[in-house]
Image (cartoon, rainbow, N blue to C red; front, side, top):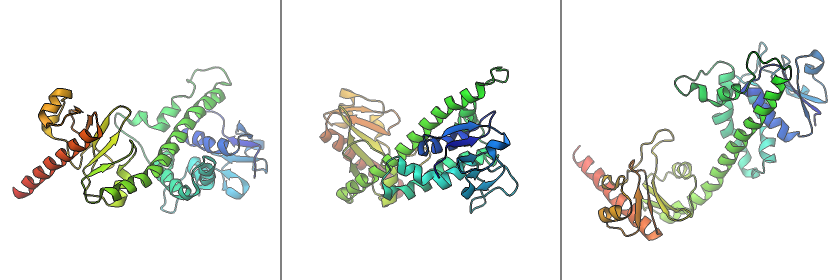
Length: 313
C-alpha cells in the first residue's frame, strides 16, 4: 500500500509518533501528515496509515495504536508504543531505503530495536522512568520541550511545533543509523587488522574508526592498545573493558600523564612523542614509528605491573 495520508493524533506530541513519522515520511514522501482525532480520519482506509491513535492494532488495515485494552506486547512481554509497531513493520524497508547493504539490514534492525526503539517504547508506556540529573536530557524529554507553551493562543502552534520537532527527530534517527552502519563497515577492517596483529598486543588501524565492538566480537582479549593515523599525527589509545564506563584494559604509563613534546620525549625516550592525556587513555605522536614505539613501551609497562600484581597476590 502506498498511502496518501499519514494520520496521527492532534494536540500535544510525544517521541513515539514523532519517530514513527520519521520512518514513514522517508518511505512515503508523497504522503501528507494529518494530525487529527476526527472519526473520519482515524478510521482505517486504503489511502492512509494511522498510528498512535484509533484504538486498534491491525497491520493489514494500516492502523498501529497501542493505547487500547489488549495492546500488543513483544514476545518477552515488554510493551510497544507506536514507534515500536511502525519499526517492526516498516523498519527493514526504512533501512533498505537508507542504502544499507542488504546483508546488514537484519542485524541493524535488531540492534536499533534494542538500543533505540525499545527505550522510547518503555518510556512512552511508563515502564521506564529515567531519573537523576540526566532524566530531563533523554531524547523523549528533549523532544517534548519543543511543544508550545501552555498559554500559546495560536491554533496552528501545535502543528507548527510538531513539524519543527519532526525535523530534529529525523536528524537523530538518521545520525544513529549512519553511526551504526559505520560500525558494521569498520568491523570488517578491524577484523583484518586483528588477523594481521596475530598475538601482538597492539592493533594498528588504517584510520580512526569504531574498534571495540569488533575486538570484543573477535575475542581478541590480548589486545591492549590501538594505534592509528589522524590528520596530522598518530594516535595511541587504550581499549575500554566494558561498553559502559572508562576503565581500560591497560592505562598508558603514569609517568607520561599530562606531558607534551620535549617533556614527554624526555620521560619516555621516544623522539616524536607529542602528547599524553592526564587521564592516560590517549596519547599522540608525530610519526607512525613513534606511535608504535609508545604503544609497545606502554604494553611492556602494563604487563610488568600486571606480573607484579599477580606475584604479590
